[in-house]
Length: 424
Ligand code: HEC
Ligand code: HEC
Ligand code: HEC
Ligand code: HEC
Ligand code: HEC
Ligand code: HEC
Ligand code: HEC
Ligand code: HEC
Image 1 (cartoon, rainbow, N blue to C red):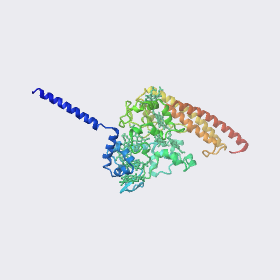
Image 2: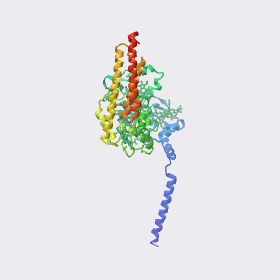
Image 3: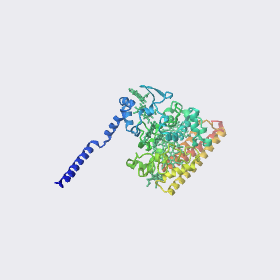
Image 4: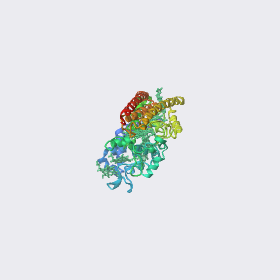
């Protein structure tokens, strides 16, 4: 009897345990949908805005409810309710809210990210590129002027006044064009600069989403900066397109390694904490050259920038391999520079001799000379540093050479016409 008792107990408790496990598995195991709605109910109950907005704009409440921020206790009020002195605020259902939260609100909890962003070309410089400093307050202007990349000499952003194409196209076009992309660095009425929301799409503010290249590809595409297209043809982009669905996109920021992501996206190389590099919102931190400029020169922090980027590559490649890639790309850049300088001299000669006006985009030849560096020269350089051979070659150097021949021919014709008839 005595020896039987524990045995019954053992069997009894094992069976009970198994039953409990089954009950758990069938009732508690999270299925995507159930988990979501449970989160939403407990979320909206504590927030007046969310409780009402669940009826008014259910999509917004549902999206925010599944975000990391909602789970960490952040509420609608944290971003939308502002002090009465805020010029962007208005009365709303007994609250004083802003419809468009700016980096000023994010900075309350994310000061480091906001400062880094503000000190990058994604901040003020993106807006200065269009309309100069006219929309900036003295305080905002000061923030922009502290960015090292801004002080880059004769063709520097700091000397840029209004962009001529921006003014030629005018307000009937620019709000749906230039401003949509460049508003990433818009000066805001509350004194802050820029729009985090351009990358961190509302209201999920999803970390896995912002690490994917499509976020950057909203703006970094097309003939003048085809970084997205170049990425797609690179081995890195092919890895992303064919294997990316298996990667661990949700890894906590700062903890990403090659086992989460065996090939890089735009964010990995330019922003993510990876290996010995910390996360940065200063997208210029890992760069060494002004590639977007007509004639490329070194950045003020060229050495540190290049070392930082190389140490990202070094997580996956040997340092010798990486040095070789940089050497190939530097050599393409030197070639492009020499061709662009040749075209520049031709254009300057025409202006000096009174053959064409120095007004931008006044003649066909000024459009052609602009395309030469702005489309083909830039594209070849971007392709070289980001592993896009078709962009170096057939979208880059080949049309660049053809364009130079065209500019030379046009210049000769203009000179001949000038000799016989005067100014064109
Ligand atoms: C009692 C209901 C109610 C409460 C409480 C409420 N809202 Fe609203 N809210 C509305 C309605 C209704 C609209 C108009 C929706 C529309 O036009 O489709 C609206 C619109 C908005 C808009 C867009 C306004 C615009 O001009 O585009 C924002 C932003 C907003 N609410 C945020 C909030 C925040 C943040 C809170 C909490 C501080 C809040 N709401 C509290 C009902 C409410
Ligand atoms: C982490 C900050 C943050 C939180 C928290 C937040 N929002 Fe927003 N919300 C934004 C941003 C950013 C925008 C877009 C601003 C812009 O670009 O104009 C926005 C826009 C809106 C709009 C107007 C635009 C539209 O699509 O209609 C409404 C309404 C709104 N939020 C409601 C809410 C509600 C309700 C909650 C809580 C469930 C909430 N927000 C929580 C940041 C936040
Ligand atoms: C009231 C404080 C507060 C405000 C205001 C706030 N956040 Fe957050 N944010 C948090 C907290 C807390 C977390 C969660 C941190 C964690 O869990 O690691 C977070 C996380 C994030 C993350 C990472 C999400 C993830 O999945 O890891 C992003 C991106 C983010 N916030 C963007 C923003 C932006 C953009 C704004 C302004 C529009 C903003 N936040 C405003 C407190 C805030
Ligand atoms: C599709 C988004 C998009 C549109 C539309 C757009 N840009 Fe840009 N622009 C960019 C990006 C991205 C860069 C950065 C290129 C780089 O650094 O490689 C850039 C760079 C520039 C630069 C060079 C950087 C500088 O600060 O000097 C100027 C000038 C410029 N854009 C002006 C304009 C003007 C003027 C328009 C409209 C006529 C315009 N852009 C339309 C995305 C855009
Ligand atoms: C150019 C796109 C872009 C813009 C603009 C941007 N972010 Fe981010 N942000 C990212 C990326 C990419 C990551 C993820 C980095 C990684 O892989 O860990 C990130 C991560 C974050 C995180 C989590 C970082 C951490 O270490 O926990 C926060 C918080 C954040 N961003 C806040 C902001 C705020 C606030 C702004 C505006 C001042 C902003 N971001 C603007 C792309 C952007
Ligand atoms: C393998 C790493 C890597 C990936 C992936 C990558 N880049 Fe780059 N990127 C570079 C390097 C290296 C440079 C040139 C660095 C220098 O100046 O020394 C560069 C240059 C740039 C520049 C030029 C800045 C200037 O001077 O005009 C932009 C803009 C850019 N990348 C955006 C992107 C975008 C957007 C994506 C994704 C579609 C992307 N990059 C993917 C490594 C990368
Ligand atoms: C809303 C449009 C937009 C988005 C989204 C965007 N960028 Fe940009 N980016 C720009 C513009 C505009 C510039 C050029 C700003 C200027 O004219 O000074 C730029 C410049 C850059 C530069 C050059 C910085 C320098 O110092 O020269 C890099 C690198 C870059 N972006 C990387 C990224 C990456 C990586 C992402 C995605 C995580 C991204 N961008 C998302 C608009 C965007
Ligand atoms: C997270 C890991 C990772 C990082 C970071 C990374 N790469 Fe790669 N890279 C890969 C993988 C994986 C491949 C595909 C291997 C293949 O082509 O067989 C690849 C392929 C390449 C190729 C094509 C190789 C070939 O044989 O055709 C080049 C060139 C390259 N990377 C250069 C770079 C440079 C330069 C950097 C830094 C600016 C960099 N990579 C950063 C993982 C990485």
